[in-house]
Image 1 (tube, one colour):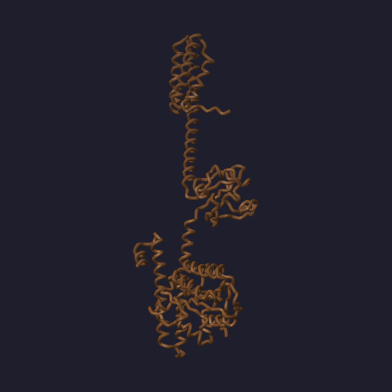
Image 2 (tube, chains in turn orange, yellow):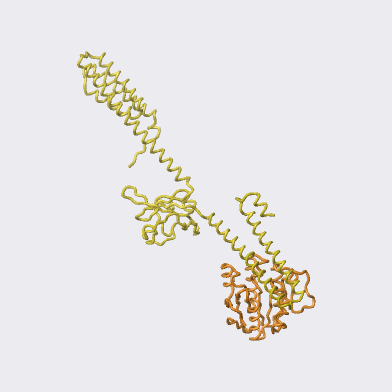
Length: 187
Length: 320
């Protein structure tokens, strides 16, 4: 596992690249590391997996889901309905509605403005199913600009070898660090 | 100081006028000389209109000489008291007049044909130079200064020929530094090589360039010719962008769906997956596949709308 320590006053934007086979485990490990190093609230923008199942999966693996807030862009789109009694989650109707996603991010950041926050975008690859590369770049630029203004940290998750060099170079320009997970499984 | 002869002075009427004056002068002189029993000397002046007429009018000049000779023979026969020797001398002179006239006429016709050929070749060359769809710049190999540029080169660079002439080609139309000319200094060959041409607005025009050497007398020149590849490069970039977007929005997402389905399969093997989770996960993957198909359709439609060269049937099929 590469060094992934994020402190409470961290303002870095990290581009994390993981092999597809170990993507879930690496995400889990990353969230654990973040929770171990302080009382940061994690806002997960999920485009590939529904928030309910991620919550369940994280909970089963020893993560404090009370300190995680989800912006779920896939559940409503895929199933047409969303669980009503989920407090730590905001649903966006479509993953390609980047304006709605932007608004959801803004309102969520406002909601937790008293706390130290880190945003986790899961994942860049899944977003490319629903948005063009240029729209995605604009959206990521918007999120990062917001984080920079608010002095917050952010993590862009992507599957290694799932991004072309042009997009990778654009994302690297936006990010402060690029972390690459090794091929073997992390523990 | 150069004296310019007005065109009206050098046309056929002017030539005819000159010839008429000379003929009149010769006629008066002939009559005057023969009346005064002078048989020689004045005849030398006949050569002037004879040569001029043959040079200017070719075959008609020879006819003029025959007529002038007839006048001369008539004058010799009727004026004064000609003897047989004088008649024979006059006939001899007439033969020389006509011979010189013929020689001058043939020479004049040959020169005129050569001149016409040169003019025709010049016009053909100018036509090619002005209409060829390739930029051509002539550069002095010794000084690297531009000597000439055709209209296509002017269009591509944005400079007029007058602006280019006398300029060093380095840093003007060629990005190479002075003293690092690929041909003259580095000894390289440029044969249908992809290069850039610098234009007036500072942009670099992609070109397919060939440079050949030309020797005229002792002078050596470089003929730089280049074809504008902007459209080709644009098409290449469009194709690359299409491939890039196809990979990003079709191939990589399919890989992601495949990985997601693999995870689902693993969970089913473990028999710990709940039905709601499976139904939602499958619904997500179904939506993902729908979106991937939409992406593919979007790319196909973009191709169908932007590429005009594809057949209509294929266009309709792609836009379906």
